[in-house]
Length: 390
Image 1 (cartoon, helix red, strand yellow):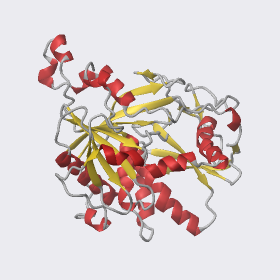
Image 2 (cartoon, helix red, strand yellow):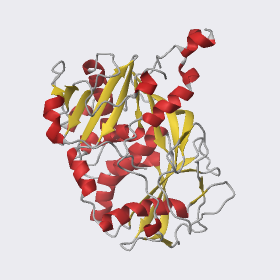
Image 3 (cartoon, rainbow, N blue to C red):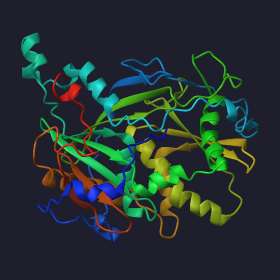
C-alpha cells in the first residue's frame, strides 16, 4: 500500500520557518562513505507486537479483522488476470484527507501496557495510566523508513520528513513535497488506471477467509487495510513502526507467513531486467525486509494490463541480484545510511515538546537540510487527543 501525505504549498513556507543551525546538513553522497567496513550493521529481527485494521470508512480497529488470505492459482506460470476489470467501479480512498501517523497513535493508546518497563508494571492502574514514556526512540510508518533506506541510490524523488520529540520519543511523519503534489495533480487517466491495477491484482489472489475464494466481481476498494505493528532495533536506535500487509499464507513454511503482492511489466530485454533490479527491487526489498516478510508474489503483466504469470521472490535473495549488476545497490549502504540519519535526528531534535516540529528536507542528490518550524505550522502532526489525553 502507498500512503498519502499532506501536501505542502512552498509559497507559504518562507514565512513560517526559523532555520535551525545546531547541526550541519547531512551529506548523502558519495554513497561509498556509507559502506563502512562492509559489514551489515546490527538490525534486530523485527518482532510483531500487534496489528490494526482500517475498515472501508477508514475507521480504526485494534484487531486483525481486515487481514486477507493468500489464494494461489493452480499454475502460477499460466494465469490470466485482467487488471483493467472493474476500474470504473473503484472505491477509492480520499487522498486529500491527511491521516498523518494517527492510526499508529491510536494503536499506542490501546496498547500502553506493551511499553511498560518491569518496575512500571508493578504500579497501580492509576499510576500506569499516567505513564507517557514509550521507552522507544522512534515511531513512524514503515513507508518512511523504506524511503530513507533507498535514499543513497535515489536520483529522482526527494522527501519531506517532519520530526517531533515528545516524552523521549522521536515521532516521524512524511509530507508530500511540492513536486510530488504536482505529480498527483497532473496524473493522466491512464496513469490512474495503472495505479488501480495493483489493487486489482490483490483481489485476484486473496480471500477474506482461509478457505475462501477470490471475489473478483466485487468492486475493488483501497480503503480497507491490515497493518502489522513491529518492534526492532538498528544499532543504538529502538524502533516502533507499522506497515500494511497484503495477506497471510497459512501454508508457508517460514515463521512469518505474511506475503507481499507486486505487479510489473513483463521483462523482455536485459535493459528492462537491469532497470527492474536497480529501481524497483530495491524498494520491494526494503519494504518487505523491514517487517520481516519473506516472500513477494510478483505478477508479470502485458501493456494491456493482463497478468500472464506469477513469480515467488524470496526477500532475502533480492540483494544478490543487485550485487551481480554493475552499479547495483548495496543493502549495507542502505542500512548504514539509515543509522546515520537517525543519529543525525537525535542530535538535531533536542527540544522535547509536542508542538515543536523539525523539518528535514532532501532533494537528490543534495544534502539533507533541517529547519525548525514556527508554532502552528502546517507540519505540526501530533494531535492534542494523543498528547493531552492519550
